[in-house]
Length: 79
Length: 138
View 1 (cartoon, chains in turn red, green):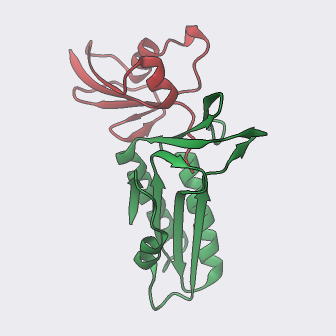
View 2 (view 1 turned 120 degrees about the vertical axis):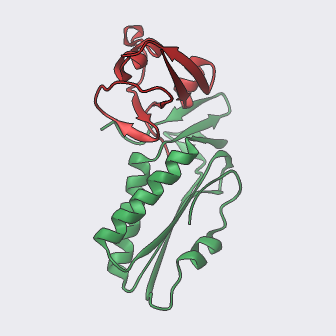
C-alpha cells in the first residue's frame, strides 16, 4: 500500500469539500487511476484537470510512489 | 524576489530588488483588480494558489528569461486571498541595459505566469461568484 498526499484547488477543492487528504492506495496505482477515482469523468461536469506530482506538472500516466504529493488543478486563472 | 503574498504588493520593493546601475531600462507591469467582467459588476477578487509551486514556476520563468535575454533581471509578486477592486493583484518588474529586451522579457514573464502558475481567481458579484479561467487548458 502507498500513502499519497493529495491537494485540491479552487473548484476541485469545493468539489472534494477539503483542500488536502492523506490517502492509502494499492501499490501499482497510477496517476490517471487516482484522478479518475477522485474526480470520475463519468460525472460529466468536471473541468479539464491537470495534475502535479511533487510540484512538477505531470502529463503522462505514471506509477505513484509512496509519499508522493499529487495536486489537482482546474484551469488556471492567475494574473 | 519571487513572492506569493496575502498582503498588499509593495511595487517599490520589487523595483529596488531589480534596479542596477548597469540598467538603462526598467519595466513595471501591474495587474489590477478590475470592477467589471462581461458587463457584470465585480465587487472583489479572491485568489487561491499552490504557493510553493507558484513560486517554483516564477523561478523557472526567471531562468528562462536569463537564457533568452542575458543581462536582464526580474522580480515577481502575486497576491493570494481577497483583493479589493483597485488593488494590485500581480506585479512583474524587469530590468535590462536597454528597453527592447526589458519589454520583451516582461511580456514573456506575465504571459507564462498566467499559463503555468497554479493560481486561481474567483470573481465575486453582488449575486454570486465564479472561478475565472485564463486560457483553454493546453
